[in-house]
Length: 318
Picture 1 (spheres, rainbow, N blue to C red):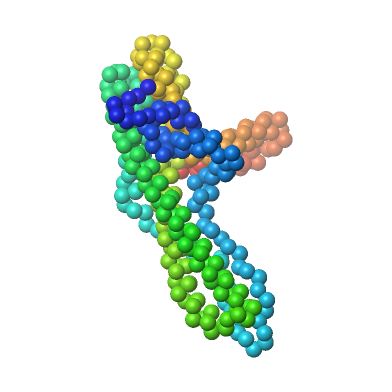
Picture 2: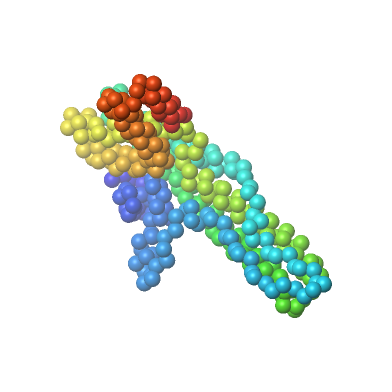
């Protein structure tokens, strides 16, 4: 059990099981620390939403209005579906924060590989491991605070955007029923559309920041992540032998096991699809070789399909 400071209260994360500072989110896996408490307090809890669900833009269907009388210019409908696809530059401070966080995670995993290779004593390993963990704790706290801030701001902007869109939709309906003239709609539309454009831009920018804060390994080549996963697996497989051989204490071994499990889950979530693709291609290659051996296909067919599969395998981790 790691001590985070005499005055800092800690809790156990219900998702990864680690002892962490009492904040909004787990510094290791990002799960909300008090979700279970909130769910218990509410008799009919709302379904948990993933970050991807929370970041979906609000899309509203235009109202169905009656056709205007002959000679009256048809009103312009609400701008649902006119959301432009925008890309925003991420705040450099966020990029720097996530870059530092990623580096410390990578160094921590690689340090386990050095330990497996008998390249470091337990004393030096523990010193460096604690250094990386403490830095990750500090950076994760900053990250979690930013996530909470941006989420709150995003919900506020979404509510404002929805209200403006409703107002524009309402004006169109009033024109359709003859309550106001199309001229009044034309006069009010530019201001409302300007607000919609501004709020759409603001919500998209906030979504981009949140997406970056939830993408630890952004920009890391798949092959590098695959290599890190192999290192983490090697470390996990070697733990029992390291503890039995007296290389590391049982307490440190248990801590490393939990830590490596979390890392492996994260890596699998990023490159799981590529690993599945590789498995399917290797299975296809094995089946192809069997078909050739039993004479189902000739050497020319075998070599041609084998070349195609090998090229696909080479491109998976590029």
